[in-house]
Image (cartoon, rainbow, N blue to C red; front, side, top):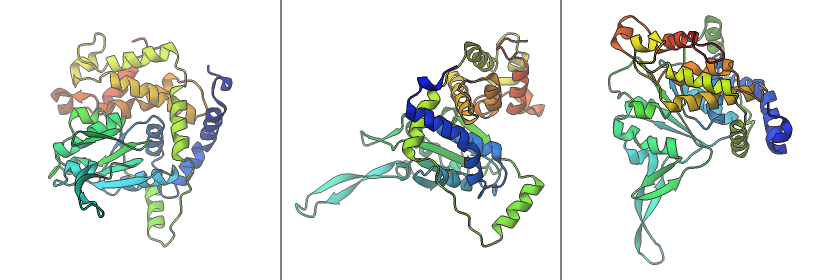
Length: 339
C-alpha cells in the first residue's frame, strides 16, 4: 500500500481533504438535488479521472441542474449547448471571422472561440444533433483540443463534457455512434425519484427559497487531485480481475456462455482503463490508498453498459446490458479467476 510519505505534501493534503469532504460535497449538491446520490458520486468520479459522462433519463429528472450544480460545487467555468438538428460544428468549436484593424484598415481572419472553450461543457440533448455536429466533439473529448481551418487550439484545463440524452423520444434524434459513445467514461442512468424524494422535490421547487452552493475546489486543486488519482496503486490481482471482466464481454470467449449467447459485441481495452481509473477515484473518495475488486464491481455497469451490444436474442428475451454485466460479474471470483 502506498504511504503518505510517497506523496508530495500538497497532494497528500488534498487527498486527505477529499476523503473528508466527500460528504460535504454531496451535501452541497443535495441543497439543489434531492436523492440521486449514486449518480452524483459517479459524476465526481468522472471529474477526478478526467473523464466524460453521458446522462440518460426521461425529461424532468434534473439532469441539466445536476451538471450546473456540480460546476458550482467545483468552482469551474460552465457553458451549456442546447443541441438541435440545425446546430453546426462551428457553433460548438468556434470559427474564423473577418475583423478590420481600426488603424491600418486591413482585414484579417480572427478566430472566435466557441462554447467548447470552458472547463465544464454541458451538451444538452446531444442526440438531437446530426452526426457531423456530434463528431465535432470527438477531438475535443479525446485530445482536449480542437482544430479550425488547419490551426489547433488547446482547450482549458480541466475540461469535461457532460452530455444528456432522452431515451424515450425518438423523433428528430440521431443515435450516437459507437466511436463517440466509447469516449464517455460513464453512461449514467438517471432514474425516477422515490416517493419521499419526490415529495421533498415538490416542497423545494414550489417555494421562494433559492439555496446557494459553496465552491469547495478550485480548478488548480482539481488538476492536482487528478494527478493524485493516477498515483493510487493497484494490486496485480485487481488488474487480472479487470482484464477477465472485460474479456468476458467479448463473444467467443470460452467458459463465459452469456457473452457467446447474448452479446453481439464486447468492450475494448478502453473499458479496462476506465474501470481502473474509476476504481482509483472511488478508493480515494473513501479514504483508501488502494483499489479493491469491490470498487471495480461498483463501477462495472456505468463503464460497460454503453460499450457492449446485446444481440437480437437478448433483446427479444428482455435482457438488458446491466443484467448481463451482473451475470458476467457472477462468473468471476474476487481473485479474478473464472468460476
